[in-house]
Image 1 (cartoon, rainbow, N blue to C red):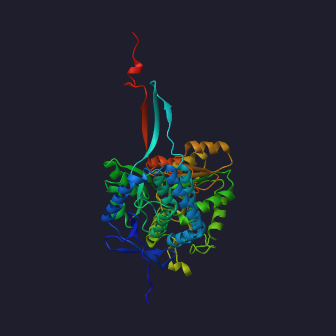
Image 2 (cartoon, one colour; image 1 turned 90 degrees about the vertical axis):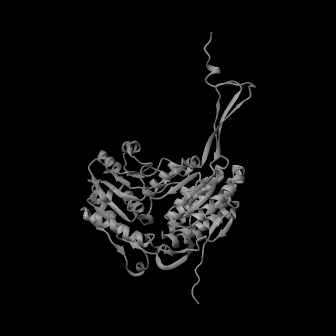
Image 3 (cartoon, rainbow, N blue to C red; image 1 turned 135 degrees about the horizontal axis):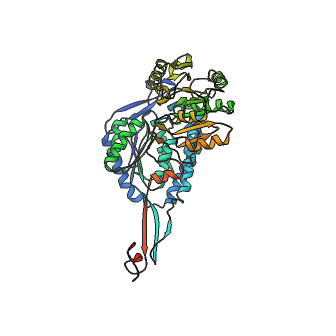
Length: 502
């Protein structure tokens, strides 16, 4: 008997349905190309339209559900996620590839975000301010926007969707959600949990498919009021252009080329710990991954000696093996792309210290692995220091002073995350003032954002919005100003109260 492959469906108007196209795509384990997790629909604009219409219809009633009640549903989702954390973590690792410890962290972040949304349902606050006229009351309230199109990436299959889904729903919006094509099954389980938690039919709609057909179909649909996208800066520009033409709200979380400064007074053991975690955690597949080390010449030799000794001992393999520290890249195309950047780095004159090729020994030949790679002799303007590689590749830039380090760090079109290792409080505060990033860590890695604080960056990293914490709720709500005049007469602001005597 042939092995039966599970099929996962779209979720539209509260029902699990096949795509109208009748087409399917396989979802494979990046640690083992022969392990097919299932098949998902290859949807098109017709499926998107059905989902948007369902969301528009559901919005009429969902927006009237009191925000604390909407928050309670998010709280129930948190409880279900907590109960299923280990199950979800193992599925996530099998589908995306990150090691199980990180898979658990990914799911925990979605739990924490749901718990935050539970409380936010009672904190969708406005302001009350004095009116300039007598017998008149002035305040602001929050209002939902309508249908939100949420497009998420594959590298954090539960955490990043939770950043979008939970605030959007708590604010009273309805949703059309397109997960990444590399991680559709974890996204399906997330939607099932929301359904189980009590989200009414049509409030959350899930459409699987490619970025061109489904992603841009959502972006261009006139019934969608807001787009939230996490992905590459190139795609983000195209989305922003489309949204701009239609005056559609657009929240973009895009690329990064993050650097850690290691000063001559740094705790080198701590700096090495943070560098390894930042560069090779999630196999470098984070928008906040440490891609550049900017190290003072006085400590460079000792730093690199300790770093190389540790990196060469990192164990690669399937993420479900809890002795493994570095999992696979997400697909075969990523291996080719990362290797292409490595070859460009070699051509530019950078010195390869370790790694530099796909890893294919033993069990690794089944999956899409790349050796942890470190380059030395990289200049701040070189290709390795400028382009987002999104893989386990670290470039070392040598500097002679703090000011030179800051200049090297800021020499990037991106501005997401940065860190500095120093014992000098004055340098730390100057870094807080001078780095051109949305996130800064002092004596820590460039990764490790906490869900209750704003997350986002400057320059080509985004368009100014911040996901996470209280700022996410600004993305998914409108501010409505309300005046209540109980004087019994027409009062004209700036006129009746500004008449000149005599």
